[in-house]
Image 1 (cartoon, rainbow, N blue to C red):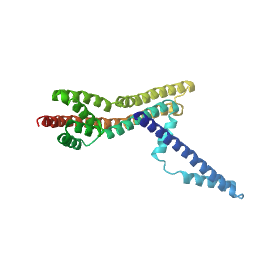
Image 2 (cartoon, rainbow, N blue to C red; image 1 turned 120 degrees about the horizontal axis):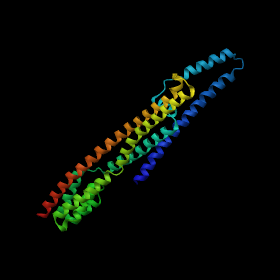
Image 3 (tube, helix red, strand yellow; image 1 turned 135 degrees about the vertical axis):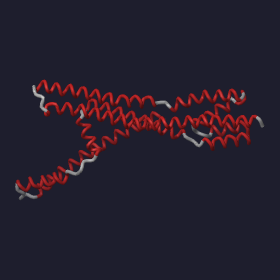
Image 4 (spheres, one colour; image 1 turned 180 degrees about the vertical axis):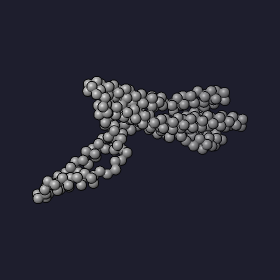
Length: 274
């Protein structure tokens, strides 16, 4: 299920990129067709009028460029090599982040309500009734309660050991895949810096080939160098935000599990004294 969600997220991100690219091509084609039809529709148009019309159309179409369009243009200017790798780091990092957020959201339950239901089930039908309640409840806390109930006949000491052991297993499941996000956070700026170094090498190669150190000679290489760094940092910042949210969500769930486990032991202790 988690692999399917990650794959679906990846496909969605790629589809959005392709749709934006197709839309840009269609927009340019429509503008070009409109200009051609305007000129062709008037056979008496002089060369000066044609030039004036084209200038007016060009002026009208110079609308304020959106941030998304600027970002896309600069990404293309940075070159397909390192920029493509940085984009892959962003896509895979976001896919894992989205999958983790969905998984953690589904793992969150109302533990206070579950404890009340378990307590009521113990008073009504004993351990078997309580087992039925936790089996019908999803989430890691219910699974921990189920492990504790399975060890009830061995004593409360064994119940506590089972809860601690299985709690470690559940915590590992919650943290699964988080290390990959931190890898992409570190990898994206490193790739950007590598692109910077390669861009500077290209700039010096251009200087050596031209025998001149004028700005027009080195501008292309320096631009590539700076763009790769910028996009690497942007990817790292985006993934860092998701990473911190996921870590805070995991910490909240772990604290909730610990508090619920202590309360669950108290409920079983009270039940055993009856």
